Length: 244
Length: 244
Image (cartoon, rainbow over the protein chains, first blue to last red):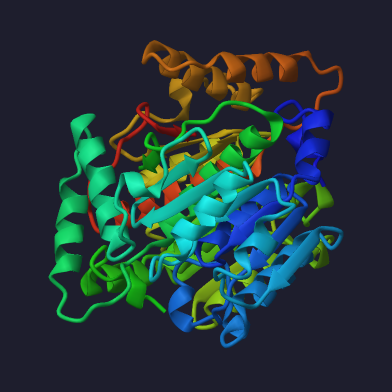
């Protein structure tokens, strides 16, 4: 299966990522990341998500019409096993909370924090990862652009942006835009979209596109690889952002 | 299905891409691009590929273990219909040649030239697209980085790199590296990989990773969108290249 990885990935590196245990906290954007990482060679993935698949997920997440109504964790496990039946995939249809985070975070090598910001759980999750010296990737779907930042015991953590999880995604997006603008990027279109989102009468989840999901998946698979083989990655408050 | 595309994609744009007919010439890297484009809202895709799925494709292409031995065009059609059963997907299990290119290229709005460079067919394909004023996207998997360039009647064409399709992928990679190096990018690792590939005793197809496939898919879906709604894109000899 990995014969075409040759040259880019040495046999020792391939073996290393095979056993490198990924904790996927959130199988929304995480569902696309997991498939890319699996195809690269990560064979040990634990998936946690309490949601079921909805039709409105299909514009950007790794699910099919037959998956609608099923737990995301189970549906994603089935998809990953259809690609590699020998992979070690654990699926848990539950939400992360104060009680179960310590259990799930122990014994993994790296975590992907793709949890919705509707409580302080993403903060608690990172805190527990940090205390166990487990790097946590934060991928974000910003429509036409993908953003990823990495939190470790040597980096800043989420409270660098805000101590309050309320409206955290908007605060985070503002942080990213501010930094990219300072670096000379033209963020006018993204600013307009963010303003339109803030102006919506109904409080809806933010819009997200397949474009950013796919780019984020490629970036995260690369970051996971670098972390597994001990190569350096940018740490938060620095971050990765890619768009066309 | 597209409710979460709101703001980034207007209703008129969503309708426009729904009917914008994509010709997918080659369902290798093309298989990942097609899914991303479909989830964004492209609903009319014609797939041409004469290959069957092999196990060695699974490290980076959009197939499963059950697909092994089946025609790629059919397997991809099934995957796309599982995501959107109402999409208009045509699958043709055949190779493109001088005789059938004019037929397939007529009546499409945009083409993705993801054909293997083992003959002059990619050149003929572009020539026919150009004569019918159809933009052709060229996506390339460069391992950890994805490259896409767009050929139209107003751009340069493939012969700008070489008139000879032999070893075209290597010539193309050299072209890309030269330009990225001139722009100040550190291409040392990629150069080492390219050298290692040239030094291989057996003449094998080039190594390719899931990372670049996923990034290329995001980039191509965005380019397809821009072409469909009449927004400007970079034209060859300029190109898009993204890596971590």
